[in-house]
Image (cartoon, rainbow, N blue to C red; front, side, top):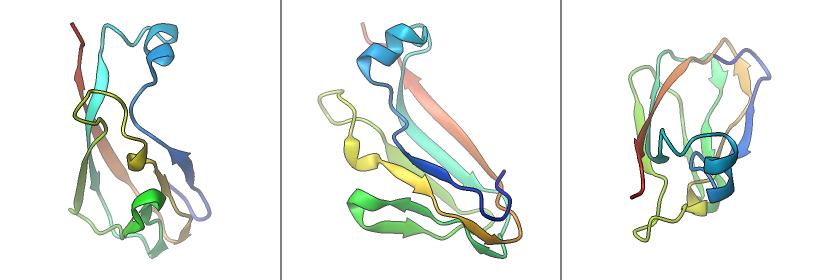
Length: 104
């Protein structure tokens, strides 16, 4: 949930190998896919930006954004780096589901 001016700084959703170990995520597995749904229409701003792809998604109630966090090799895909731009009016609410896979 984002209020006016709130952001989520640039990040990826996959874990680096050391993070899987350090934060005990190995049992849960790597985040393979991200599925995000906008639950409302903010009054302004709040776009999800993928800077390396030159893409912004405008939040709209019911709109879903889905992306694969990994390359075919299973390594993290840095091109999926994303951020939430500031909400300028109203609020923005999303729900995110991460699909995971444990490596053998």
